[in-house]
Image (cartoon, rainbow, N blue to C red):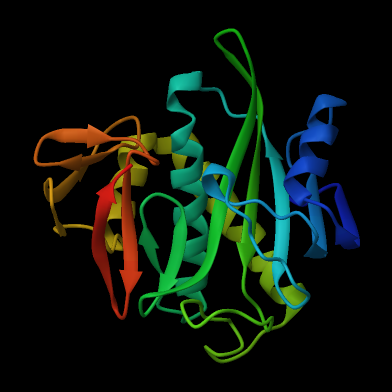
Length: 235
């Protein structure tokens, strides 16, 4: 398995995830990757729009992991952790905001969106989309690779693919418990006080534990302010 082969590249695309899902439906192999310089309909978690202007990295990779639908959140975890690992190897002090955001100094550098095709109790395949700010225009709550030192499109999209590969292989060889152990090291939410209690745990489904109660993404939200992650509210 080699991520990035085959590679479909576009100047502008509606959504790399959408195109990858179409390829998955047509029987594309694991590792197939869609890369675009900009997106007109970029998507984020829970239906949010991901602004995808030229200068960023927008790519989606087809994966075919062997896991139950109930454990699909694991894909987001190992993908986000892998990209964070790759960034840190490049000297960028990236950290993780549960479950899918890449942060530097309290500002968002990128994120991961996982979508899947499920038939009954079988996961037919997943598409992992990664958006990473390069030298594109971003709001004050975000940060770019250029601002952090340098940005090279070819080098940095390969960096993303390397990180996804490492995260995927770590999960395949050692399981989700190992991913969670490593994820916690760079997890900005660890020990945070929220109205419902203290964030102290992650479980085998990828849910966040707050004083013994576990929540999926979308059930509890955390806001970013300054250099810290501040408590939000239950949705």
